[in-house]
Each structure stands twice: as structure tokens, then as C-alpha cells.
Amino acid sequence: MNPQKPIILYGFPKSGHSHRAELMLRLLQLPFDFRQVDLAGGEQAGEAFLKLNPFGLVPVIDDDGVVIADSNAILVYLAKKYDPSGAWLPQDPIGAAQAQRWLSVAQGPLFNGPCSARLVTVFGAALDHERAKSIAKKLFDVLDAQLAGKTFLLGAKPTVADVALYSYTAHAPEGGVSLAPHAHIRAWLQRVEALRHFSPMPATRAGLLAA
Image (cartoon, rainbow, N blue to C red; front, side, top):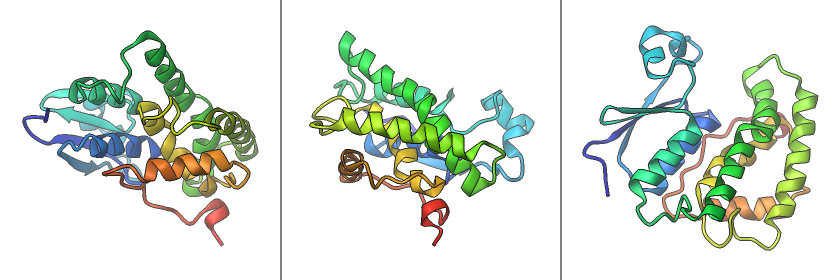
């Protein structure tokens, strides 16, 4: 199943939230047009963009008039509408709950940890860098243990859970958070990157990658 016309993705290339939406579109092989939002220029606070998302945040998609904001909501929408097999978003109660658990992690510890640490080093955000790195370490300790013996977060096949956690985990070193102690995470990242139609987020020479 494909959309009648390309989905419009309003985003920013170096936003992990934007990248997870883009990655889902690519993994589902859906045609889309990327429209970069000028965050530095404040476009996200302008009247036109606020009509798309009153919170003034990327990403947003427009699927032939159906406007969906919030990266995790976009993942759920795309999986529900364009993956009738249910492979990317489990339909059974246990699988659905497990997927939701990781979407919550993406909005909680992932955002407050590696995402926030990267906001400091890449974008100069006025956040507590040491606190963000501490949260990231605790998250990665748990995530690494959860991935032991697993191919993907929910088992043998990738789901929206993997898409939601990939971008900011992969780019954690840009925020000064090392992935070296977490062999299971690093192996998982490689498996995600090996998926057909995978496309990376642009790298930034910051944090541990600045040298």
C-alpha cells in the first residue's frame, strides 16, 4: 500500500526526532518530500508552521491532508496505515505493550539523556550536560542488558521500538556519551544499519567525535 501522493515530511536533518520519522518512511519504502524547517531562523515559531504543530516542534508529516505531529505518533501512524502485516507495530496485547514501553523510553530517558547531552554539544543548549550524560549511562546500562541475546528490541524482527531508539543512541558520542562499554548496543546498531533501505542521520563532529 502506497500513498496517493508523496508524504510531506517537515523536519531538520540533524534532529534525531526528525530522523526517526524519515527512517520509518524509508524502511516502509514510502515516497516522501523532505521540507527542511529553518530552526535557527525561527520558522518553527511562525504562524504557518504552528498551524501544523502548535507546539512548534519537528517533525510533522502531511499525508494528503492528514497532518501528524510528534515523531513517535508518526511512527505509529505510518506503521498502522502502511504496514498491513503488522510487523512494525505488533497488534497482540503483549507485543503492543512492549512496543509502547520503548516509545515511552524514547520520550523519557532517551530524550533526557543522550538527546539532551547532544543538544548541549551540537546546538549549545543551556542544559545540565553532566546530568544528561548520567541519565544516558543509566539508560544504556539497561538497554545493553535488554539486548543481550536479542536481535532487536522485541525479538527477531525490527519494530517501531528500534526506529524510535536508534537515532539518538547511534549519535550519543556526539553528546559526549561513549558507546564503548555497551557491546550489545553497538551490535544492535549495526543490525539496524544493515536493514534494507536504511539511511543514516548526518554526523556532527562534536562531543567524543570532535577530535
